[in-house]
Length: 131
Image 1: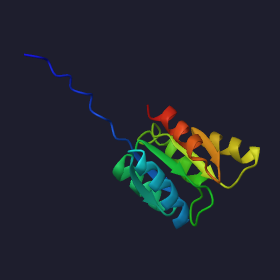
Image 2 (image 1 turned 180 degrees about the vertical axis):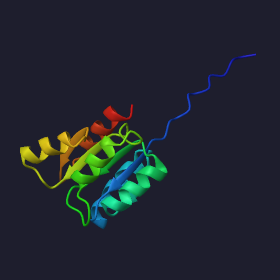
Image 3 (image 1 turned 180 degrees about the horizontal axis):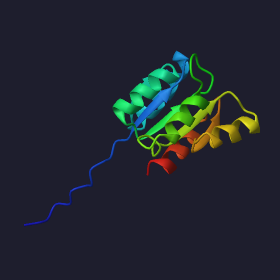
Image 4 (image 1 turned 60 degrees about the horizontal axis):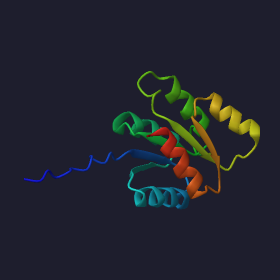
């Protein structure tokens, strides 16, 4: 009898996309879903915090400028909470100044990408954080 090799189970990572722009949310969610990720979305910081606590995503893509809490505020809150601090956050923002990038990283983000988001750069960043 010949042994049959069973391929390893594919790990599906869940990614939360947080952006107040429906167009941006759709673009990112569609890109990630086509690459095999499970995608959930949030329109603002408060919704993001609730979904992160309930869903425990593998990674969060966080916009900065949103109604209510900014992405910087949400990132700081989550990165300081022992229950959520291990979830990597990548800021995806139109704020492209070096000071914004440094500030985002100081708040606890593990990466900072500027819009318009380049698919290859985003996928590389994600692969490096959820390997």
